[in-house]
Length: 192
Picture (cartoon, rainbow, N blue to C red):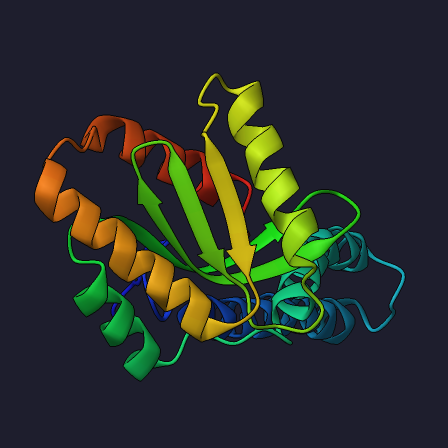
């Protein structure tokens, strides 16, 4: 299984598979330790039981992360290719589940151009204004205050904005790619 890095299309699907397998393996090890302890000592009151119970903690953590990510899908390949094509000069990120402690906001795509950040969040559970405000606040707190942060629930307006930004980049050629990468990294840091 090829590892897909955070921010690339297909990350959510790959991460869910990996977390599911990891949770299954960790709980299998816990069960194996319990069985071995019972077979050896003929009672469940032994050190193996204690080790198995302690082993449930990391397994449960992985399972909780898997359950939190389970409802969200990766961006469709066709949509991702179209965004890549229309926004070839922009810094892009895909498959993010942004969390602010109280809310989980899946964002399928983000396009970054200089101090402008535009996102696409088709999931009906995502409030675009709340997601935009949270992204702007995170960037402001780290000294990367963008001039514009907007998250779209509809694909066509998002794609139009990406095309417009890409056209402006073709004309001006003044992208600060280091700044764009820093903005992308900060957004990915608040994403699962």
